[in-house]
Image (cartoon, rainbow, N blue to C red; front, side):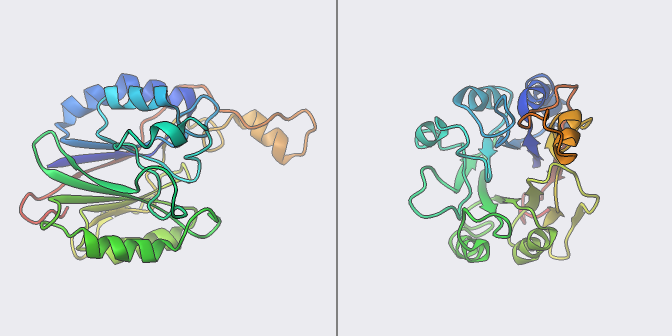
Length: 253
């Protein structure tokens, strides 16, 4: 079972890369299940629209995860209730529209559980991420309720992400971090068999400041009054993510 998860899709260039490159990547690597974090897919680089969602699914994604920018496009609060493959963080404040996890069928007819979590440090829009993770572990068990389990931990702090990785070790197929738009070089299989990476980066133009136009970002940091509101860099985008081959018998990496 080959599983691919891609980091935050960043603005128009990220969307172009997904549409053009993902279908061939799926064929070349014989990928059975694809998760894409789409929370920055909109034209301004924040939020996701219905059009973005449809295009990502058409490119081959099975599930789209999000994060702290999930509601930055107001239309998302409406269509997320009917599009069950689009997830928002599980630990958002109770009553938030949509779902934080689901169990989906892969191309090879396996049951794949995906949960979207969001860190608490510098992320004040959500409830305790560790309580949400513990509740999920008790509710959805590997090889009992799902053949494979994928965790997207959307967070700012590396320590939170690492701790979530250890909490899920042996209980999930893979745990990856999103949000910082910079891939970390600590991808590994943990001792109990869970694949882990602190951050899988972004699908966007890396000749930028985390996906935003670098000249304008510098102007803002230098307090230049001519600086504009942040807007995405529009150069050629790189697809960034993690592919894991999982064992059908154990559900682990």
